[in-house]
Every structure is written in structure tokens, then in C-alpha cells.
Image (cartoon, rainbow over the protein chains, first blue to last red):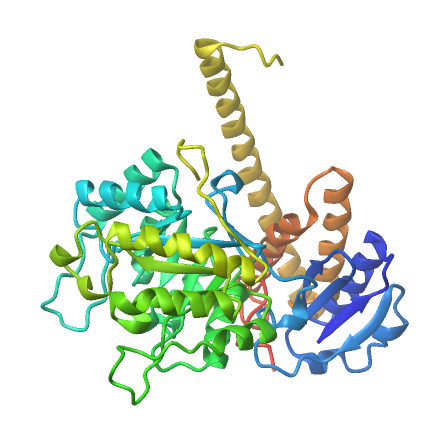
Length: 352
Length: 117
């Protein structure tokens, strides 16, 4: 249930409304927008039966939220959410007017390799660096990532370039360690419904990049976001990365329609991973263009200094010149969508 | 305090600030210990008076009071509310451990499962 207040509601009136709701055992969430203020009620709504909310001073309307997700739903927020990563000076935000591009290798293979990747993607205009430390691979015999060593390399490269970093966390036991080294924590597609992990990520003070599961519906993705938010972390960015269909010509099928659907259902930012969706370097640019045209708030693109020698996902990684070309072309698509392409911070000092 | 401190002086001042922060943290811990001890006592008293441990009306009043006080002190009210929901939740669990009836699922903060629906 959400309560919309009168336009000039006072702090004392808001406090009073929240006390009325909380005194029956529910919790409240406040969202103050430019034009309106929304008080979201969380918990058993039957507890509010018999509470004459409409007669409480400051209340304009009371509306039930019929969706199973509340905190993630569009109705709960007065304005779309903007998630800032790595401190405001890092220029990396999702959900505002700028489109933010995250780029980097699938996995961190060495300091030299990440240095090369970071300077190439930064020069091309990427605002954030990606790089896997722990890799969830389908085969237990495939390269599993460098783990802690990779986290330390990511930290060092972050300090040297000023690019905030995002890396995947696979296990509840790794959450604190990864949060120490990364500016944003990624939940991979295979872990989207790892509810213990999602709950743990609700307790960290780092933005979360939540990737859609291979066979997850939009509703299931939003319920996964709700898990993180219900545990206290409201900085969630959603990522469409292709879903499994009967089509075998592409690795996955990019669900372009999911972008406007999520925007309609939720106030959370949405980005797209065109590299995993197509599984083919040649498909990255067209899928990226489609994503921006459909309203995505950003992209996460795999770039490897030498794709032929990549230890994982070399086929879908762009080489630096191809990435630079993509970034140049994206500007026109961003402008057509009424957006701008985010620029990397000029500051190279350590963020976060 | 001056903004003109140079390298070594600024570092000395930083160390002094950190000492003071440490002392304040100790005071916060000792205040929390006292608050929880009082919570334990109220738990026993509620049991003697035949009252339930979970008292949402009282919890809501506590949160409203600290919200206003935080605002008056120039602190951001929302994070202070979160901190106090944690404290109220801890206090409730101490009361339960003191022999009262367990209340609804322990953690403070909004929950997906548990009391919802």
C-alpha cells in the first residue's frame, strides 16, 4: 500500500503518518520527489484495516500495490532511482540522463592485462571497469578466476585509473571481501535466485548489479531485487543479458522488450549486457544500439586487449579498436534517445 | 580549527580526531549496553505485568521521537531511523531472551517473508 501526501506536507505530518502505520506493526519507506512524497507501507496490510488513513492530516490518497514486489515497484518511488557508483566525483551513475558504459575483460588474468584493458576502455570513454575475480563456469574444469589476487589487481587498477570497478560475488562468504575491493557488486545470472546471497547483499553499503537469470521472468528479476532492497540496500541496478530460447544462432536471445517493461514496472535503472546476450563479438554493436534505443541506462561490454588469448569468453570480447568504434557510434544513438553518453572522470585519484 | 594546516600538522590533527572518534565509539557501545540492560529489565516487568513483549505502538513512538530529535540536531532522519530500528529490534530480542513471549520474526527492518502478506 502506498500513501501519497498532499503537496505541501510538513515533516511533522509525515512523521505522524508514519507513526500511525508503524504503530500497527508495519514498516514504512519514504520517497520524496520533486513534486510529491510517497510513503510506502511494508508488511501485512490487513493490520491497517480500521485505521482511517485518509483522515490523517497530510494524506492525499491511499492506493494498494497489487504487485508482489513493493520496494522495487514503480509506485513506491516518487522519481526514477539514480544509483551512484564510487562516489559522485567518479561520474558513474545509472538512471540519470547520462548513459554509463562499463567495459573490461571477462576475467582478470594479470595486472598487465587489466592495465592494458583499463587504459583502452578509459580512453574510449567507458566510465567503469569490469573484471571477474570469481568465475561461475559451466564446467568445473574451466578457468575459475584468480580470486583474491584478482580483487587486489582490480583495486590497484581502480586507484591508478580512477575508474570504479564492478566484479561478481558468487558466495555469501565472499561478500565482505569483495565489498572491500570493488565499488559495485555483481550478482551473476546463475545466482539471481540465490536468496541467501541476495539477503546478504542487502546488508552491504555498495550498489548491486543484478543480472537477469537465463530463464527468469521479469517478475522474478524484480522479486530478486526486492530481496536485496527488503534487507536494506536500495541501490540496485538491473541487467538484461539475454534469455534462453529455442534459437541456437545466438548464445542467448536479448529480450529488448524487457527494458521498457522493467521501466514501466520499476523505478530501478536497467542496463544491458550485449556481449553475453549474443555470445559473439560481431553482435555486440547492434545489440548495444538496440538497447540504447529501447531506453537502457547503460551497457556492460566485454573488452579484452587480446581476445584471441583470453582465458574465458574470448569469442564475445571486443578488441580495443572495435570498442572505441562502438563508443563513437553510440553517441548518436544516445542523442536520438534524448540521452548523453557519460564521460569518465578526469580525476585519477582513488575512488571510494 | 584552521584550514591552513600543512602536511605533518594535518596528519597530527587527523590522528587526534581519530582518537576522539574512538572515545566516542566506546561511549556509544557503553550507552548501547545500558540501553539493552534496561530493555532486559522492561522485558521482565512486562512479563510480571502480563504484557506482550512486542509493542508496535511503543516502537513507533520511539522511532518518531528520535526522527524529530535527529532532524532538530541537523542529522539526516532516514539513516537515524534505520539505526534506531536496529536498536529497537535488538532490545526486543533481549526482552524475549529475558523470558517473554517471542514476538514476530526477529530482525528489524522491512521483511519480505515473515509478517508480510
